[in-house]
Image (cartoon, rainbow, N blue to C red):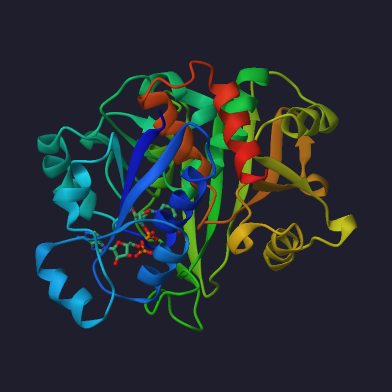
Length: 336
Ligand code: NAD
């Protein structure tokens, strides 16, 4: 019997999580919600996801739009073991009571706070914390990216301190609102919230962050400085990351010098929706001076959290005890 999964909020993250869940052999999508009969509602149906209206007041809208729905969120909740909330940041907190009352386990995204579930999830770093849990939060795209590269460093060499500058995309490609079209905007509240968010997964890590929003739509770029406890050579660090799941080494020498070229590579690889679910680290941008490691990494904000949601379902539903086995299974199924 496959675990039954629902998605509330079939947007940028929701449609990708639905796609990834439907590629696993131990779980399946039993329904997704939309608020409007938009093109994404048709996408859901085309991808074989039963469609539900998010709220009863949306039902007329779907009828007028000629799109048939199976019911509303309450009906979907009766069918699921786990609901993955992919609604806009802050909406998940309002939904938690509804999920709890329906007896459904629930997963939230990075737009929600850590306190709501007390479990901030990354498959490599703390899979066991979500074991059998009734709710958990998959951390944001930036936090996922930082944890993917910092956690193995901490295991192998120890970390005294990290400083990271985040150069962030201003909006997702389909967004109508976001950053100014011709301006670079620093986050003035310092240090930014990204460091504390990493600590919800890697407790006790000394990390500070600054961030700047730029007028691009694809990928964040991180400039990371990590003071290691033990001296590490550049080849040792690269060896470590080459065997770390969901980290992809790229190289300027091979012609990958910017984030646009990483997204082009994802398309060349035939990735669905052109997604690069791995964190891309520039091999030739890694430098060690004394005990200090410097590196650049790029994060495809729309997709790096997607396989993490699948692993989180597996941990919460106790489908696979070993995190590396779950990661490998998810990766195989989504073509990583
Ligand atoms: P989105 O706006 O692309 O999608 C949200 C979807 O939820 C839309 O389809 C919207 O119509 C629907 N929705 C709105 N209100 C709803 C409601 N009350 N009930 C049900 N559905 C509702 O947003 P997104 O970018 O997919 O973000 C979702 C979550 O994922 C947020 O917590 C966000 O912080 C997090 N996240 C986003 C990114 C990113 O870069 N896009 C990356 C990582 C995590």
